[in-house]
Image 1 (cartoon, helix red, strand yellow):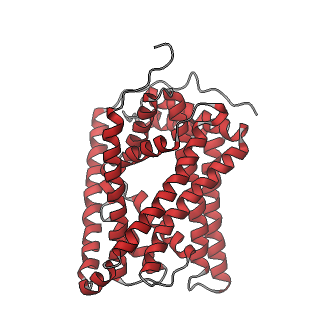
Image 2: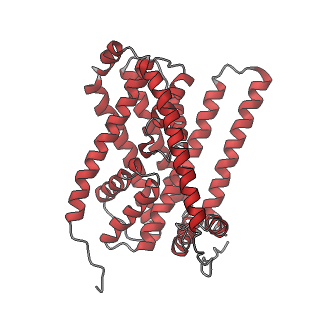
Image 3: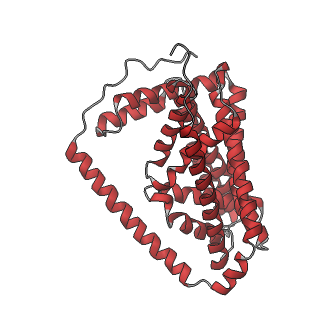
Length: 360
């Protein structure tokens, strides 16, 4: 099936100042309200912690934290190889593993501090690759294709996690089976819908963003951004239709990325002496991811991630507040480690002179 081109698409529309100001006020109110509610809940949990028992658990930090960092490194590495496959599709030029790894860290460094961190982070990755002579179009298509596959892998792993949790829940009998099958069916439809959006030859993601821009007049959905969305959607569709094996391999690597992200929880639980399965750890990771997505307007998901940890640990039967706080601290410790590495790497990268493109 021939892929349609994205030329002659929508024209940008001017922003409505009053509407934008109202939207910003609503977002600010929702953000602060959510932050206050979550922090009250987190403080309530912390108040019930036995700090003597917590201290005993944290004595294992010299073992736990390096293992958590190692699991996160494997997770990032798998995602990095997936990104490299997106970048080199069709014989296009790629970049060395370690350079892409550093660019990923620098881009992801923005996410904890900015509600638009994902967008800003991906933009930084494109800018950094441009310094290596990669065209903006090629860099952007690789970044957005990779992001789409990471989301697809996340949804697929969430479907598996939901099924696992429902099968192990207290719901029994015909009703329980119907609830489980219905939930999984809905999740599978969501996965299929996202997959079709990403690879459909009619460029449905671009059309959706275009339609939103026409109806809302949001200033950040500029004509240039819509054009780039169509371009990235086109590349993702071409990737699937012309390189199906590479596409499936890339999706598989994105799933490995999520599995080893979940292994952070497994390492923590095992080190603390808990009898928790790998599937339980995956369920926790996927569930916490949902909370972080819903609370993405909060810088660093402060309190949101911790509350998500608590809910998901309770769901798999780990109700100790001391274990919850120890696990949350280990995860934040891992985050701070990679933020520090990214900060140092950014100093090195920005001092390096950019490569000149041929003909310049």
